Length: 301
Image: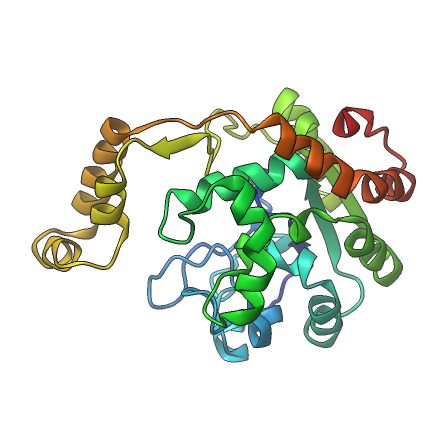
């Protein structure tokens, strides 16, 4: 039997609520979204359609066509098949070419967008909780592009400013596909059920009750101690022994407990940096407003 393939994609942007939307969509009886591959590894973001650009920079992904098709082996008659890879938006030229090559031109595209200033700070806060980022926000946004260009092991997720210049990305998808649905993060947070219902309508499935209480990958935290950050997140002897001695579920519980004890609310963004970013993004926001026919005045304050 010919394998079924995605007929919709959640293409980004990163730190805009995509993990939560993926989770809500996956609860619907007529929607299938892969969470694990045939080896039992978590693969919410397959990244296959941009594999040539990210395979050496990101630790997880689905890098072969056979493995990508196998993600959908467990489909049981669901009407809508989808996957979520947030970097399909930023790497739009490569992604669009491969979407058409592998999936065809009738794929429905869902895009989630957030005020790019706060998206950048959220991405920075997330990276700072790992070993990806050890600089101040100001230094990080100033150096990110050069770091990315000069070190082929650096994740594209540190492109804090570049990932938020949405207009060219959104325009390219609009020109390439007939079915585009844009979700604004503020609307999604304010009335989650309403926005999820709009997505159900866009996909052509019946409205169903899904649990929207839990938001995934929510940020806003920082480490109180650099020692604990390095101990838990770095490559060290402690982590090697910890992994050998304890099963995955117990490791997860221990890590989450440690995080609760040794993490606190992240600092507010510095106003000077915020104003600098507003100047950087303003023209792009104005262009985006016209593209998606939405009032984004709150983004320009």
